[in-house]
Image (cartoon, helix red, strand yellow):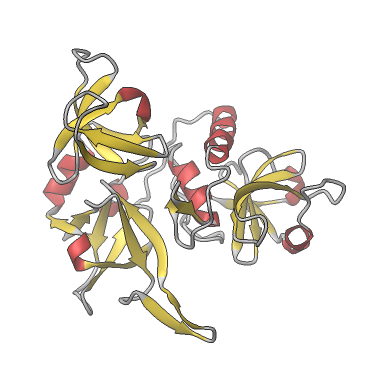
Length: 294
């Protein structure tokens, strides 16, 4: 069986429980978030009210059973093959009619997926959309972008990647996408403008370009990022630290989501000790650079 996320944001847990015990006490077991319209494969039986799932970017976890709409593969394929678009603004209201004074049917975060069912310009600037739960409404066209990524990896053996990208355009676009998140707070397991973590930032920005990379801060076999020599790093390549990941901009600077006190959220720092935004702890612990262009 398969499933679709109907809520704006659904927590994905590492284990079939909301919390886990550590040496510091009980902490959240959230590791990721499922956004509206994203599909998953259900990989096993219910456990403690949770279902084990695998995302379309090959990340596994558990979700609460009541927060996932189960459906057969044929229905998921129909959804994936429809005219899907991606929310591009931080948050977008789905309106009952094409007016700002309309009833707000739902509010979705950047990265959520919706179906456009009518592009006609009877109401200039608005399009009619359908949500994953079948509810229809209206949204301003300017708040949507093309869905460059594919969810077909849920039922195909290969993780699908966008093979029609320009190297130069990719490097510019992925940095531009990351910089839109500047100032957003750090949230463990988050990947929306409500809060985002380090690998949430990098994986979402790559996803917007049609490239599905590993959701955590490490280079993994089976994913397109490969290690390259440090001196060959370029715009958009990834910097790996113990338990942390950042995106290289240029001129020794990088963008990342950090939980450091006094510098929380998505910020830009430097590898150069002569710069005011230098992070000594990260510069000294950088152990790998990864790129999809090897």
